[in-house]
Length: 175
Image (cartoon, rainbow, N blue to C red; front, side, top):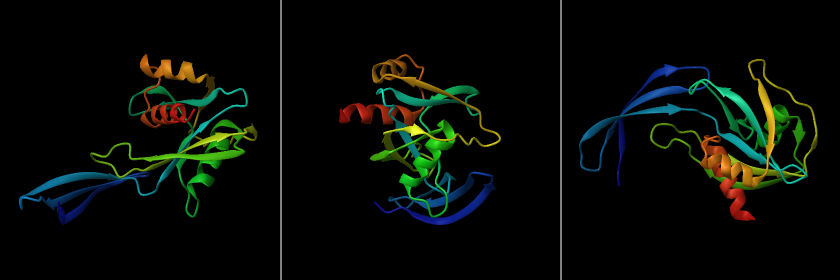
C-alpha cells in the first residue's frame, strides 16, 4: 500500500520529543492528517537477573500517570552508543549494578499509533556491584522479585509498564 506525505509541519519542540502533523495521501487517493510524536533517539531497556535468580526492578514516579511505576531499567541511547553499551550504562546508573553478560531479547515499538519510539530489549546477568549515578531529577527505589512473583504482579495490575511486561514474558519463554 502506498502512503505519501504531502506536507509535514512541526508543531512542538520539547526537551525529549517533538510533534509533527503530516498530511498524507491514502491508498484510495484521499488525504488525511496524522500527528506523530518523534522521540528522535532509540532507547534501551534491560531485565537484570540477580545471582539468586530474582529479577531486579526500579520503581519511579511517572508523571503522565501520576504513579510510582515498577519497571526495568531503561533510557535513551547516547550518541555513538550501541544498544548493549546503553543498557549496561543505564543498569549501573539506575541500580548500582554492573552487568557481566548481556543477551539480546527483542526490539519493540511501544506506541505504534502515534510515536516513533523504539526500544532495544536485553537481559543482563552475572551482576556485580557498581556505582549508582542518578540524574538530579531521578529518584528510584530498587526492588527484586522472583519470576513467579513478577508474573503475578502483571496479572494483578502491579506491573503496568509495557516494556517491563514484554521483558518478563520474553524471559519466561526462554527458560
